[in-house]
Length: 80
Image (cartoon, rainbow, N blue to C red):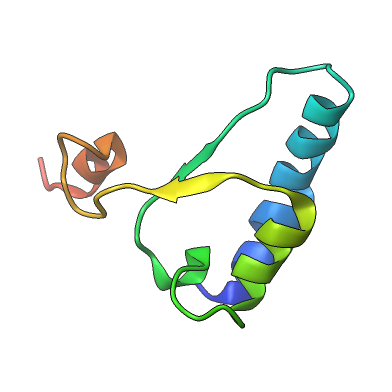
């Protein structure tokens, strides 16, 4: 996933609404769990996704990217 895609389709259209709702007390505050995909904003401090998260007060952490035990979505990619 590219930085642009993640910013436009995930952060701006979904996560931003959740952050606004949490600030208004409509939902509980949350921490976003992500895998190590480069589009999620790890690495450089100039990464546009990382900058967006900091500017919008999004707390997040990176989980182990390919462990089916720690990252349940990884089970979806296994062939039956």
